[in-house]
Length: 331
Length: 293
View (cartoon, each protein chain N blue to C red):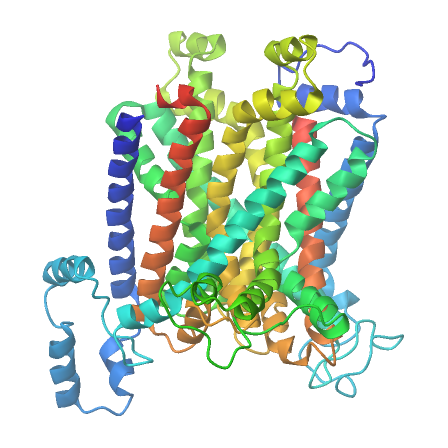
């Protein structure tokens, strides 16, 4: 197990370095001159020269790259062309909201996917209906779910809020930045239910597609596990079906579902960007949405690095979890 | 319980005989009917996409009536904030999405297939290098990378297609390489090699055809995801510029009217779902018929 973890961590660092190379090259492929967009179209030549020296854009490429990596290691992600603040500062400001939403959605996707997979693994009537339902779940774009959710649960039923993270005038600002945890730390139960209510609708919209994919993969691997000899033995011992499923079959079937979950995180992150804009969620997605039309590439680069790193880390964790569920993988 | 099936030989042999066997085996099941409906719908959609200008009752970018007309007899899906017919715009949007998805899938299959074929047949260090590159690409989140690429190149439909194609090929490289590797040990390939067939001919005539079923199935299961990814990019303003009838962008611009004139943002969203759904269902059908994985 220890060797597997070490190997995965090594691979993770290599992939992260590659990500930096990709982002750096994109920055230099970009036709927009960052200094010009920073100063505005009417900036004088002298001002452009001074500014590009200040921002380091006049050095040779390899030097710029080394500086870029060095800066990254110090947590420095250049200046945003739009907000005129360091990108790292902006990201630190927006990250907790996105992390809270993403972790909540991931957990929701896992739970819904497991329920879907396990309950439908048994053969039953109406498999065709089930297929159509899951396929529609997998085909519903996040923005459509968000619209329908807002119309139904906000406008029609008045059950759930549709904008922001909280309706408190002064939500607590520490220590974690996760409103659901911070309100609990401060003993503010009303604030907690409020923050949690704000999470549900956006979380569900993001979780739907991954949940369905996880459920489908889990279902098919469970179905094939349930046909194996050892499951027949377990049944022959007189174990109840539930025990057979949970104690014996699930552990051997969960690997493909886990890796599917890891892969889905990429599309999930893109969904986060869309959902945050619709629900006015003050996170990285909203930051992305605002940075795109202004061609704020330093900001986009920072976002790509953070979300890309998140994806790589989640998938490394998934690899290790798979080995825990099925130790044969670590061999 | 499984229904007793007539005995048919296991699926080996050519692609055509394989499909034939599968079709025969599944002729009577409900799933087969669903598959056929889906594939038929997809064919109809493709056909419609070609003749959209003839089908649309109004020009997509011209004002056709009052703004915010309810969906009804004259305007099937209502009109938007400036009075354009949403039905016509959705038709054109569907066409754009569908063609864009096909283009990206095709380029992904061609680029990935070529790399996979070279890696699989060459072996040795070429294989190692190509597959390491593929692996690091696979280890990164495609949609996020695509957003970064378009943002760097500047938002336009063409750049979006290039960006998504860049992140979409590695998967196909892996699949084609895997198939080619497993085929290389088969007797017919060895026989060809002994007969003195050259490397390139061996790859193209004897290895590539064997990799086609798995690739086709993967591609058809993939189209639905691709439709959604492209819609997300369009929603984020990374597609064609403003008046163009693009489904994702129509949703994004219509969001302001969600609580009163709900049909403006909902209809294009439903169209995306319809397209992705038909593509997913047909992809499932293709997998069942070709009997891979």
